[in-house]
Length: 111
Length: 156
Image 1: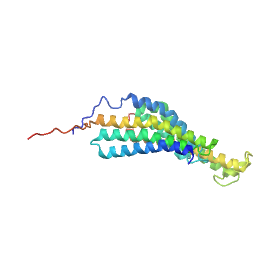
Image 2: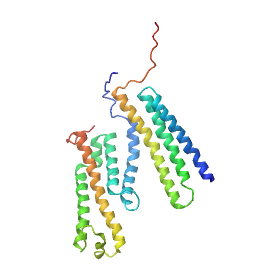
Image 3: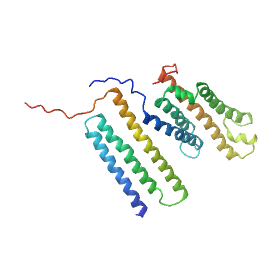
Image 4: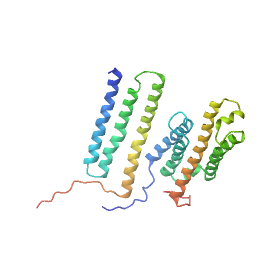
């Protein structure tokens, strides 16, 4: 275990944690908007962290070819950083335009 | 659950438009990279052409069909489609004319002596360029026709 492996483990494990939380959110939350909220966190933050961790791990024998691959991975990360929130926003807006009503807590009926 | 479509809010979103305007040049650059690096790394003419076409389809989705036809006019699109096919057939027939088989790139060495291995690489590059052009314009034309019912004037 080199120090770079340990350093790259931190963002990968954090990304795995956010993916887990996002998956639980998609399964457990009540309606479309809240599920999309969970999926959006998953897609942007967790994928970003995983890509950063993989780019760090890839630098293991430090040479120019590995540096190039890591730079490409970071470019993919930058692309995800712009695209994923936009996609979530577009889906939400399409649902809002189509008139999907947000979930509300059901009113209690007292006998 | 009632579904009433809000006409005035559909297709007018600043966030999506700004983000698409930011993304499209990089998508096109990546498409050219995939076409050019087709014989070294994963990718090639078809995949790069699809990415290039997707950039224009993204413009048509985020803005309007008119905007994408402003940046890629219909006649230029048809020209690209035919130019790609002509490049492919031209390289193949040229190989046959100088004494090799159809698409036998090493025969092009007799036309311009660069070395047979170099001509293999360069011939594949030319053919991939033709495939990329044709696939790009076919994808754009498919989207235009499908989204407007063949009229190509007003899209989704």
